[in-house]
Each structure stands twice: as C-alpha cells, then as structure tokens.
Image 1 (cartoon, helix red, strand yellow):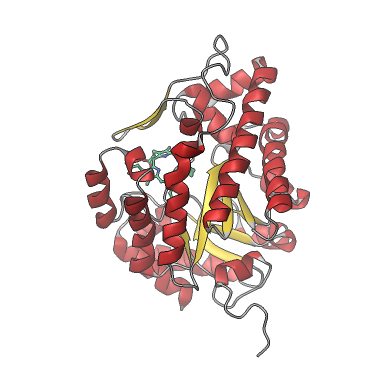
Image 2 (tube, rainbow, N blue to C red):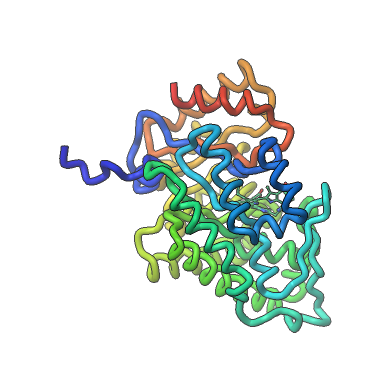
Length: 346
Ligand code: CP3
C-alpha cells in the first residue's frame, strides 16, 4: 500500500531500475509520416521547421500517437537540428531529401556560428513541452531529447546525412582542434537546451547518437562517449533525478562500454544487438530500451508476433522499455502498430 513508486509513470519506474511484468512501450519517431493526421498537419505547416517552432501544431503532433495508441511515453516533437539552427547555421528540410545545412568549412571555421544558442528562437520548443505536459494523462511520461554532439556535428560539416558521415570523420582526423571546438560548443549548447526542456516539463531525456556506427572505437570514445558523458554529468548536477537514455545506433560493443562507464541511466539497443546477449551484459548494468527491427513492424503478422515475443522473453526478467531498434518508417501500416501494442501488452 505504501509503495513509493505508486502513481509514477511505468516508463519512469523502469528507468529507475524496476522490472515490470508488462514493459512500458513507446516508439522512436512515433509522431511522423506513417500517421495520416500527421501528414495533414505537416502540409498545413508548410515547412518542417515551421511545424517544430509552432507550439500549437507541435503539441498536437506530439499527442497524436498517444491518443491513437496509448503509448507509455510521449516524445517532444522537434528535431536534433534545431540546435545548429539556433546557433545561426542555415538549416532547411528539402521535401523527400532530408536536412540540408550550410556546411562548416575549415576556412571559415566556426565564425558563422554564435557562441551561444538563441533561446528566443527555441522558446516555442519549450512552450511545446509545457503544453504537451499539460495535455498528457499523469501516467504518460514526457521525453525531451537532443542529438549527441558527434551526430549533430556530422550534419553541420557534411551539410546533410551521408551513409557513413565520411566528411565529418575526415574533418575530425585532419582538424582535431577545430573539430574539438565545435564539439565543445555543441556540448554547452545541448546542456542549455536540455535544461530548458526539463524546466518546461520533460521528465526524462534521450540522447540520439544516430551515427555512432560510423566511428572506429577510439574515435567513438573520444568524440561520442566523452562529450555525451559531459552532457549527462551536467544534467545530473544541475537537475538531479532526470534519467537520461543514450541511444548509440550502430555502436556494437560500444553500447556495453557506455553502460559500463555509467554515463547513461538507461541504454538504447538498436536492432542489430542480440537481446539474449544484452540480457547477460548490458541489462545487468542498466535498464535497456529496444529493440524491434522497424522492418519486422512493416512485415507484421507472424513475423512481428515472433519478433516481439523473442524480445519480451529475452529482456523480460530485468528493467526493459519496449521500443523499436530505430525510428518507425513512413510506410508502416497502422494496423501493425496496433498489433504491436496488443502483443507487447498481452
Ligand atoms: O520521435 C519523434 O516522434 C520525435 C520527433 C523527432 C523527429 N526527429 C521528427 C522528424 C526526433 C526525436 C527526431 C530525431 C532526429 N532527427 C534524428 C535522430 C534519430 C534518428 O532517426 O536517427 C536525426 C538523425 C534527425 C535529423 C533528421 N530530421 C533527418 C535525417 C530527417 C529526414 C529523414 C526523414 O525521416 O524524413 C529529419 C526530418 C524529420 N524529423 C521528420 C520528422 C517527423 C520528417 C520530416 C517531414 O515530416 O517531412
């Protein structure tokens, strides 16, 4: 009766280390183009950044998947690239082509960037967090997020997504000092951005290191783990009690290192990681989140049922948040998401 965690959202209980019979569930990129109600609002907004910076519309798209599927957590609708945008770099989203940025060059260095993020530019994002929290049921947690410095820097240098972020990797080898300055600027900016999200109502944070897989181990430690560690340390000092999930996609053995180093309160697993191995290693150290292949969700039927059951069996005896192993894809049938929710909760 006197359970101190009673009333606390299931998602936050698991991040605090509890094992629940039914794992809390959300999906990376759960607000997005697979939903017709998202596509309708996206069209009305005009540009993608307009949608991110409009609190009414961004609140609405954040809540859409919660209303439809009753997920255990909502994630703020925004993007990792609002940080370079708020540093003064030109960011656009070309229809069907992904992000485009005015690339950082060795010649110009960081001269085109501000030394601090423009909080006026980001105010609508924090207002969105505030509105979303007010619109969510108490049992549904609200996640704030950012990109990890390496992933964001890789877009800032290449000007777009590339398969292995070679331009930024080469830049890091050839100009480590300048690259380090960019990483430091991103660490500082990201801490400010996350603290504002927490103060507006975010109850947990996720750091997306989407291009971890492009880094060899030594560079992963230097340019991914180290700056992420500084961000998490600052959050722990300045806003203790707000758990941070680190999702280092493609990091392979690096994921276990992240867990061992203690720089994450919980660890995201991408779909290439064997949940049965993660159970013996990573989950012994930290709560884990993941890791259904988004393509198994597109396949649906028996494929999906078996994949969900396997992950539940492998990770069900420890703290586990059910999620995909990367973002949901636009062509995913809604009926399959319904099947997923039912299967996880059965
Ligand atoms: O998860 C959510 O529902 C919250 C919102 C969210 C978006 N992007 C919305 C979005 C989050 C958490 C992100 C993170 C993000 N953005 C990452 C890390 C996660 C990952 O997928 O690895 C990255 C690398 C980005 C950068 C980015 N933004 C890319 C590469 C693209 C284009 C690719 C695509 O899916 O279109 C975006 C645009 C974007 N961000 C969309 C959404 C819903 C689609 C834009 C549209 O509607 O036209």
